[in-house]
Image (cartoon, rainbow, N blue to C red; front, side, top):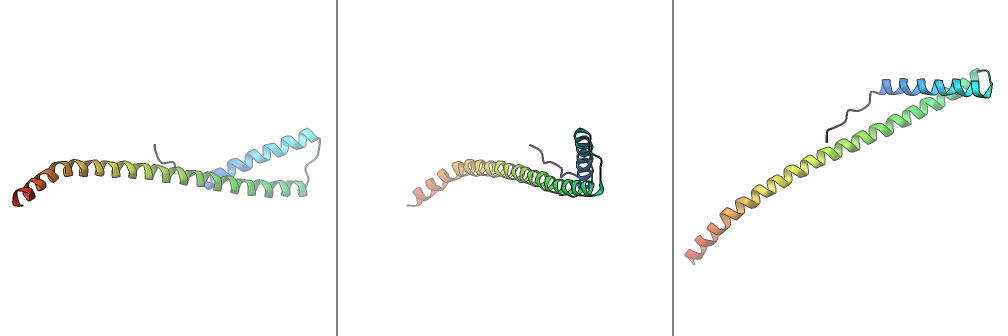
Length: 104
């Protein structure tokens, strides 16, 4: 697995706000309403908060994924070190036992 790049906050915000504006326009047309300042401001505030929450969610998922990748790589290296140590002990321990056995 590879590490993910964190999303660009400005691009994420712009994409989210564009989609929200399209939904707002479609909703107004569907309902047959005219845009007004109060409704537009409320929609913009709600969309900005949703963009912030979505960015935090994506960044958290990216962080968790990257931590998992790092831990997997660490686990693989630790297992490799353990295997090397086990083969070394398998070669050295019998020799040490023979030497101490001969001295006793």
